[in-house]
View 1 (cartoon, helix red, strand yellow):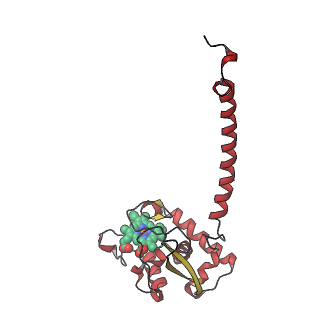
View 2 (cartoon, rainbow, N blue to C red):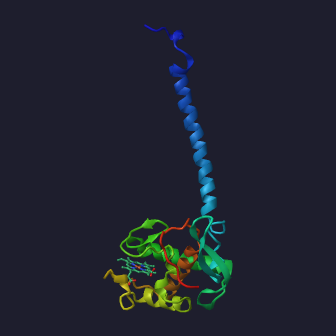
View 3 (cartoon, protein in one colour):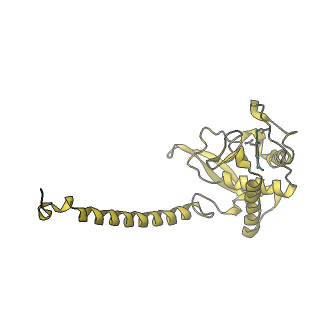
Length: 199
Ligand code: HEC
């Protein structure tokens, strides 16, 4: 039988107990630090997630050779529905859009930033979708579509139609603001193979 004092230090039970406590403690700390880091990066007004007032500007989607992916480029003034909004107004509008999207459970069919379903098109870059024809008519077409998706259906050859969700005009406009803001987020090129509207 091996006597206790014959066991080398790194094979002792005591050493492994202490290591387990130390590693758990260290990793908890790392997790806390990473959480702060992530929250910083996903907050509106940070490098990748523009402030809500970005909806007052044109949003382009351009290929960046160095990064080998498409990235949003914020351009000159181009207010949504012709209204320049203050930071507070833009935040209020986008918040209403978010709440409406949650209340109507759009993610049951659609995907936003990687969450949701793939029954219907990914909405992350829907604002930049060439399906809207041209940027000059996009806002109106989106509004008409959201208010009455059955009669403005395009279906993209899938035969799938979006049901009428009974949105008010204010709700539909707030959703468009939300989608415009979302299209300005740098998502590392996701969704991939996305073609953009001619700006
Ligand atoms: C029952 C499934 C379903 C639900 C729920 C649903 N949609 Fe859709 N949606 C579709 C389908 C199918 C299409 C594609 C057909 C079409 O464009 O006519 C579509 C298309 C769209 C488009 C056009 C996308 C593009 O890039 O051209 C937008 C924008 C949109 N939906 C927004 C919404 C919003 C906002 C909600 C929640 C308020 C919602 N949808 C809820 C099924 C759904």
